Length: 639
Image (cartoon, rainbow, N blue to C red; front, side, top):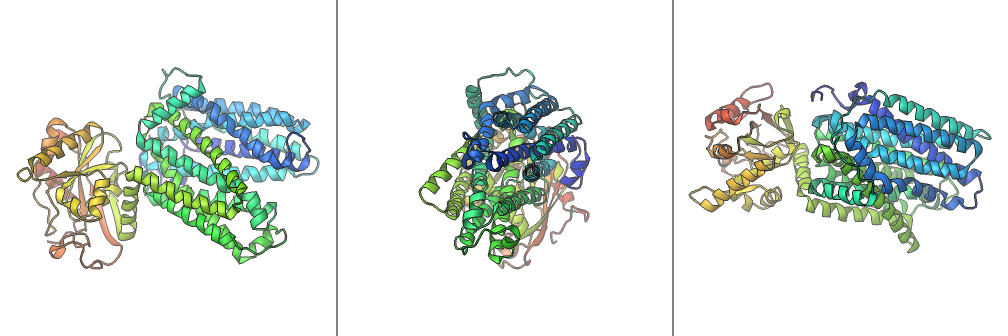
């Protein structure tokens, strides 16, 4: 595992062996899938007359045959990925792709439609086997700070490869007389290149070599779903990703009809819509690393969901009253200003879908037990396929009920708002991280120093000075993992903030003399948090400072360490005194623009202390030191 600072951004990963060969292997595989499928679809739609594969249903049948292996074999592929070295699985799958493409080349050369349809099924099997490897490989080779960027690169690469594959397939098959021969050569060439890049993928040892394969897809699928359900955050994230595939499938499936019936464009306009959609997904995926500040930032998921709904709804208004026109080519289409709004809506809708999906994939990879990670990804692939099938059935139902295509888009956008709200209410962690994300980007300019000292796994106690009513929100934004806070019981009575901290499952504590039962209950809950391997945060001053000075630290942390000797991480919030949420002038939340907007605040994180080295005085000295220098641990608290 490399250091968190080995590369300046996600693109630098393309220069490293642990990522680059894998990236190009998956890129070539996704491209070849689509080159082959699109060329075959165009051939049977425009160039051949096959009685049992009519042009109007050919695309749907080919798509269905491709998806079928995901339902049949995902459970098995997850087991194979967990049991064997992932690099060996990748190389075996890419060898299988070469064999399939040789058979497909013969099918193109001889115009043998049944053989080509069988190859569609086999390429679906190839993608089914590669899917769990694709997402289980990354957390073995990238650390937590790299995971969002790595996933963003893979998502971007996948959609660019899909786009290039479809363009190449369409151009090659359109060559008069020899088009199918060029497709045959192209498919085999790309498969061989993919196999060559796979040879350079570094070893990825098995995470569960003793696993006994269950070849029954039904029982294993149920078993995988139970495994995923064991971690409720992971399971509901799987459902969230599957919903994104449902959402995207509605738009992708309707592009040809939307271009023809609503936008009055030709098939090239439909291709333009696909280009805009794919570019949007790619840009959104790449933006995640920058927006997340190189952490797994699930606060981006609500942001993505909001954008998906806004631009799906606006797409309805942008496209519902376009004037009739003759079949427009791309040049004529883009000359009309009304169409720019349609393309902007599609591009932004897909951009936010990328922002929505990448953190969810990274969260699943980070929170899944490594020995079961590939099987959980396999369960996700099964759910994705089921959601896409349901999506196509529901779209067909709505169209049969005389919904227009823009009305279908509107219904999907509104349904996204309902589903997203339901998910975020079930999983407050997403909502809380979103609030923290907004607070640290729109209310404050928040800088974190040495955040690598916050543990990415295992139990630990975080100890911090207490300057304002939003200290916990800022700490949430700084940590890659959820934090449980012990907080003064009176803060829970404050409107909005009290509700927020209840959602965060903060632990209320009262002075022992005031409420002995609440005091004992708080420490019992704190010990339980550490037993479960989570992060616990204590503000040892016992309350928010009233004068900006660091107060004496109380001994509560020592009481917890007596039974749970875990590492203790000192932290210091800087420059919050005097902000809207601090108690300057005796009361908080007065004079909102005292410090202007985008006020600079920060958090400095110290090296963890072993439990045996901890005392209240030593912790206070550490926090005071973190508040003391100009180089990233700045003391800006007034005297």
